[in-house]
Image (tube, rainbow, N blue to C red):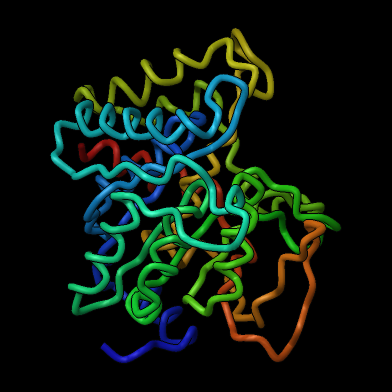
Length: 310
């Protein structure tokens, strides 16, 4: 398979070809990965190949146990949906923890390498957490850069003055590497100083999930069980009762492949993530695809359609 330009990849994203996908996620971390996972499972636009588990850091789950928590969360979704997608454990520690830049080998990294090297078409690697596993896979086998396109939700929108964003900073050196190594990249940013930009517009409340109308096990789980588990979560905008609200960030990544016509993108020179967590620009660098805007209502509707198929 010949290496594709970013222009060719963007055209492929818009075309009707069903895309083969690996979804690398930190499902143990928060509320939203689960909806991205089931979106990929239920969409006719995606052929989900496997799930890989990413690390994260929070008070309850430091790096050395968080990946396993994500692994178990992935297995739970596979069980709830009565599917048999393979799930692979990722790295236990970030690339950033090493004294010099290098890979963190794992079953997840090896799965990415094996899948890419055996494929006869472009594999999309969707990343909804720290990018440790994907960066490590590329370091271990650089040839996969010509076989994959990474779609990653990370970093703030470039209108903001700093890049202190959760997915990126959980393994900042891995993020720097991804932008520097030349792998085809679609960057889906999070917070913006402009209203309606970024993925922070994907705000849901309990009423939102009533659009899930199926009474399958998956439907009941995503409409009722999973939201109820977060009633008192400190990560809600407000928690408890009718004011419950959450941002379902990660479905923006799957939506890039399922409803690209509801997004706008730019092909730009890839910026540099500097050591002081800023963004620097160099017009001579290789190109990447940057998500400019998305239609949050259309993304939610597509996610719920996918769940209703399960």
